[in-house]
Image 1: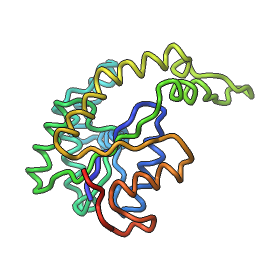
Image 2: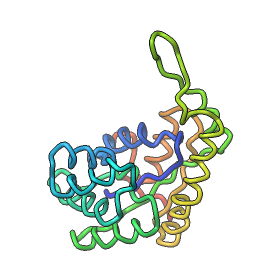
Image 3: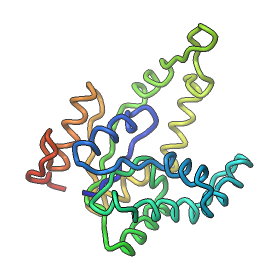
Image 4: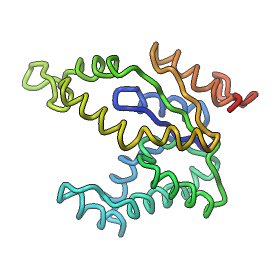
Length: 204
């Protein structure tokens, strides 16, 4: 099964990606992991990306997409994958579709974790980390910064929801509740039971 996981900051994507991928028996693939592997491995794409990253600039789509395509062509992903953090824009989604076609594959489902914005602000602004023996709040977790991050998400990434809905691939998942409850809803949407066995897929 080939799945894309969408959702705003604070929706629990990273946690759900690992659990759902484990249930499906496929790798959870994040763009962060792909970037780190290419940069540390000093691949040609990694060297190109590092120039932009060191300058504090966004890595161009053509480099990001090429890295993702290379990763999806690896042996462990030929039977399926769960993508977390990619695509982020409709342009990237169209390039992903083209890359998968080149590999002879297509997406099976796109899951969107849906959480009320006030709840996201509460979750993210409530995070603390230990610094010199004291619990402090990171600058990017302050409420005003969180709302800005969510605004950027709405403008840049949220349109993917409509894009994939138009493709007939989208399933929206209520991401309020325990981790187990959210996982259960996601697996039901994929037509998979709690043991990772494929059942009757949800209607799209």
